[in-house]
Length: 150
Image (cartoon, rainbow, N blue to C red; front, side, top):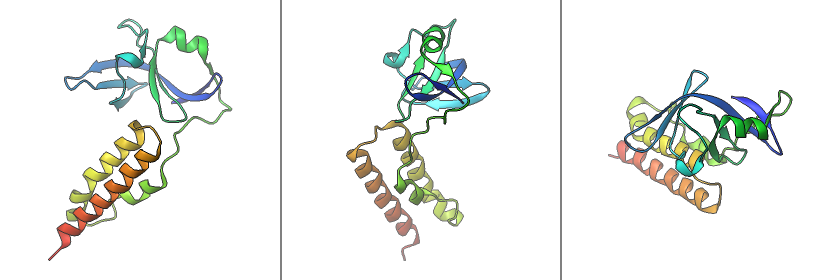
């Protein structure tokens, strides 16, 4: 995604296709890259229509929204000099990696990694999110130990 700036720098991309899934999630096509999001709902779709799919926008704190083209382009100006907004990753995320593990342990660890990524992207940064990630890490470690226990 390219960087845009108004009173804050955001990441944004023009949506080329949007498909509403049976489970309520949206699959969005952004400049040829598929992005699956679980947090875009009707409340976050600002005047988007089928004729104008608008922009997918990510703010520095990780919040995402879906803007109509005219509203977004009136509010933001494309910038090449500003650093794109990327939500800071929690330090604990490094402990959810699993590709270094033997394959039989990867199977036990991978679902925890995916859930941690979901939490990192979709849950607001606050002390409760930190607790959720810490307890998830404890559960992942226990699951891996359960696989190797004799």
